[in-house]
Structures are given as C-alpha cells and as structure tokens.
Length: 239
Length: 182
Image (cartoon, rainbow over all chains, first blue to last red; front, side):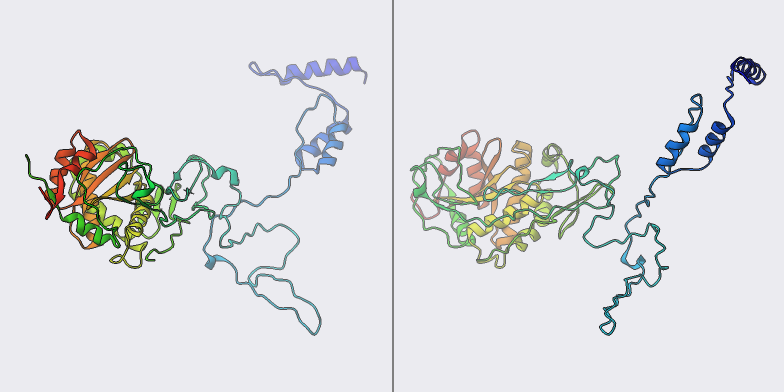
C-alpha cells in the first residue's frame, strides 16, 4: 500500500469515526510499531526496555510508556512497641561458627523483596519521611538569662503540612546557670546603684539614683534575712 | 549551695498536630498574647496574681534544695528558672539600704494594667516560698523592667504613692527604718 492510499484510508476512517464535537484523526502505522505500542501500554517496562519499545513505535504514536518504578513502602504510622513482632536474638553458635540471621519469629523468611516492614526504634523520628529541614520554623521558646543565653526551641513545621506526631526541644541547650555574680556597691559608680545587687548578671541599671539618708546595712546572708530587714521599713512621717 | 542543676532539655513540647503545648512537670500550658494579659489584669488581680504565683511556686521550689536557707542569689536563680520556663521574663534582686527590691526583667508588660497583677503575683509568690509575709509595690519601671519593693503593706503603699511619677528615688526616700530618725 503506498502513501497515497494510506492517506485516503486515514481520511475515510477519520470521517467514519468522527463525531460532531470530537473529530478523531486516524493514523495507519506498520503492524510492528502498533504491536510495540500495545505492549508498552499494557505492561510496565524497565527504563531500557521502554526506551527500546518507544524507538520502534511510529512517530505519530506519542503514548507514554509506563516504566517500572522502585517500590517504596508507604510510611507506617508510629506504633506502640507492643505491635512489633517478637524478635529472636540468637547468639553465634560457637561450635559451628555460624550466626543465624536475626529474623522476627512472627515473620516469614525474607523473600528478597521489600516487605515495607518498619520498626519504631525509640529515639528515632516516627516519620522518617519528614525532612529534617522541615522542622525548622515556627514556635520558639527562649529561656535565656543574662548569664548564659539559652534557647529551647521546639517545632518548626507549617501546620498545613505533614507534621511529625511530636516534636521536642533539641538536646543541645545550655542550662540556665545559677547566678554567679554578686555585685557589691563598690563595683559601681558611687551612688548609682543599689547597695547590694543579687542578680544573675552584672546589673545594667538605667537609673542613676542617689540614696539619701540610707543606713549602711550588712549584706544579707539569706533571702529571708533580706526580707526581714525590708519589713522593718516604715513610711517617713510627712513634713 | 542550695541550687539544683536545671536541665532545660525538653522543658517545652509543642505538639502542633494536636494543638498542645506541654511544660515539663506541669502539664499543659497555653500560650496567650502578652497584650491580652495586660488588658485583663486589672479585672483579675489580685486573685489571678495569687493563682499565678501558686502555679509558679513548684518550679521555684524545684530549683532549690533548701528554700529556707537560700541566699538572695539562689532565690534570684530559682525565680528566674520559674519565670523563664513560663515565658514571663527573668528576675534579680537588689537591696537599697534595708529595702529589698525585686527586679522583673522582660515581663509580659510594664503598663499600669499589668503592674497590679505583677504586685499581687510577686507578693504572693515571695510570701509562699519564704514563709515571710510581704507585700509588693511597683516603685520603678521602664519599657523592659519592673522594680518592686518587698516590704510591709504600709511601707509599700507609701513607696508606691511617693514613686508615682517620681521613680524609685522618691519611693525609697519616703521610707525609713522603724527605729531610725525621722
């Protein structure tokens, strides 16, 4: 059949198959190419096989050839440890030197295929599919003091996205340090600061206040003693 | 040393999927805007201040081994731990003569509405942890600090009135030791 006849036949078939609202162009291709297209459409192929099949197809056929894709088991939600199969841990047989493989007793022997079985190991993310970088964003908690700037921060995840079930504060956090600086009056400009300051850091007072008529008092050994002395204060009589 | 080491790891857990925030040792907490607290404080104090103090007290006591014998520095540390865990700021102490002053750094607000709550909270908390009944009066403030006198009710009232518009200097100048010269 020459090209002219093929063209007329295509035109005829197009008119026969056409509908009012949906014209259907028809292309006649060699039998071999058509067979390749049908096979490609029915059965997923490996990438090399799909490329070869596509090369044999007629240029007018642009069907996508499904390819075999690696099987990725879907993430399994966090489970309780009780859901896990019992594991039989067998030590190496010293008489034979063989070490049996560790196979969950309630599982069939491995067939070489991915089973999708996951184990929740304490301390590991329950949903490993969540990228670590996605954990950096929204709630922050600052428990810093002047002594040691500390950060306890927590979750950083858009609410609308897949959230890890539970996000905790990260481990590397500096603890709040006990106050170490006791600042006597002499450490400051005369009259510019309290007689004694008990603080976690050098006091940065913005107030330049002079004590008038203050009576020197011993430094408080205990907080209770400090309060007791303060309770001894009374209002000056008005002039 | 009466201070217990404070491990801040895992203090706050934000379980956003469930809409929960949990504080270690305390359970569920709610993060509310500081501005909201400022607005409702005048209506809720002093009862809300007392309740807040009682909520903070376990954290303060948990930071110390011997509350009764704790030094001012140790109390400042314990108060800071409790306040910081709750997002309420940090605390230090000062003595001006005999006057004990507590400095509240980075409180949720320093506006007048919040100062009422601050006084009630601090007086109740200090009284409970020290077993010494005290009142508190804001005698100084700026954008990031509140200074509260810890003393008797009469002394606090006098200092608060004297400081109104005149600052801590005027407040302390209005006080004298009970046995001192007039």
